[in-house]
Image 1 (cartoon, rainbow, N blue to C red):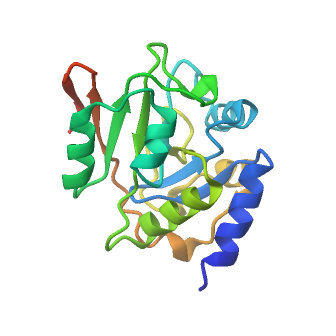
Image 2: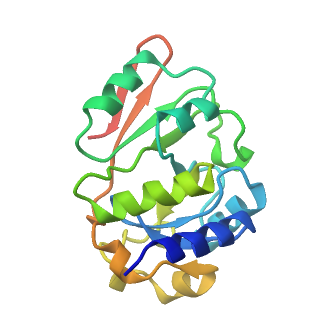
Image 3: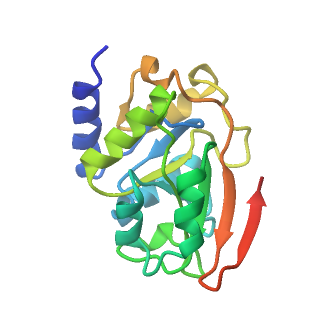
Length: 195
């Protein structure tokens, strides 16, 4: 199955302020343009999640991260370059994003999906690259319920609430496991929140 028309349709929906259900390098996610405050509010509504809880974003590369973070801690570059497992980095100093994706302390969690040997990760990176903006990536479940390990476990309520569902074959690389989460500070501080 050719991914180009699927990505084209997903990007169209995202640019129009829509919400999609799509595979990532970890789990199936609900996503929207991370710079669109109304679309982000819909994601919280679909998940029945408090806006006080921050969301993870996906970027296609470090250049995209650099556009949305005031100053990237130098250790982040090393971590991304040697990373061989899905890793979300919480960066200080978010900018040019919808205010409802930024945590109270001004930080934001961003992951660059692993694409090597992971078809869903490669699909995701291409999707984000074509969107040209970070993409919200939150698990496709109602807040407080278990994270679905596969497309079949995603609640029908979620599938019905989004504007576009990426076809299942593109989810082949989704592992069903969450990423590790590391919080960085500008002074070289490293805090592992989820190994």
